[in-house]
Length: 145
Image (cartoon, rainbow, N blue to C red; front, side, top):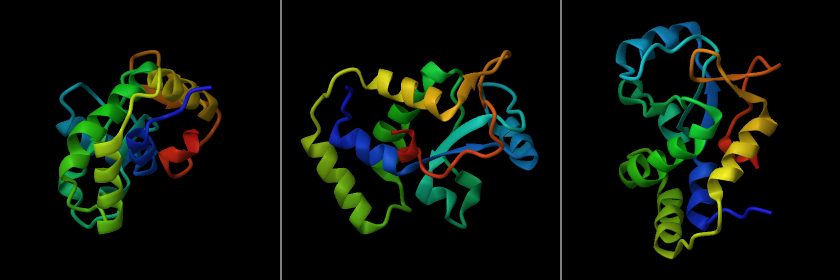
């Protein structure tokens, strides 16, 4: 059994998985330096920023494959979450405490890959990730557990 560090638990709880809409795919394709985003493509974003009215700088990442989900989570964990202005104070404190006390807990990449597969995420033929057999991704990343 794979156990996540306190830091990864906190990160997972503050991310959401979503399917890009037609409008989002056009918007993200303009600004996404790694290529075109298609409707239905799986993205990962900060839960708190996605609920903010400041959508112009919405931190969003699109994994290139199911195996890349872990790398996307790490980019949020060690990048965006250090400076997220939309974290409620209690979440920020929990995240800072987890960061200060985090200990490595084994192969966390396997956890994210297996969880993504259980959720129905699959590699798209032309790159990126899609969801098999569902029309909407349920809420928070925590549901991958």
